[in-house]
Length: 154
Image (cartoon, rainbow, N blue to C red):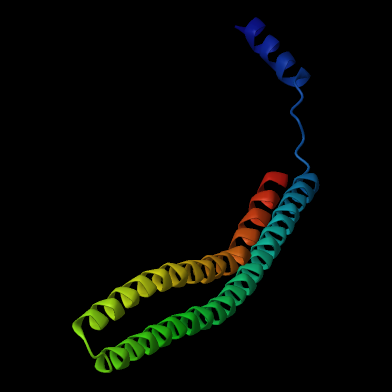
């Protein structure tokens, strides 16, 4: 037994335990925390910038939508006015007709002119509506393209 006791004491004396330096650990934790805070600040700055850009795009889109809405409304009013004037003119012409054949001729001409006018009005309205959609969607499309470009770059 004394042999084992002696061997154990020699082994314990030869073993070195690593020393723990608290100042090094504190410095590493501080550096890690500072890096985390810095990354959080950068993420917040990016988020804030993105939110501000989104707000500007939405404001721009809203203003554009208001303007375009006015254009579409004016076009609609112009179409309605032209149709009303054509109908009143036709009614005046019908009242002044002397014979049934003249009424039929006036009605045929009115229907033909009405169909031509409807096609022309549809083309005009389509052009205004297409421009409206393009104008309203352009800022949003540009913002999304920029955002996706920034995401791909990151």
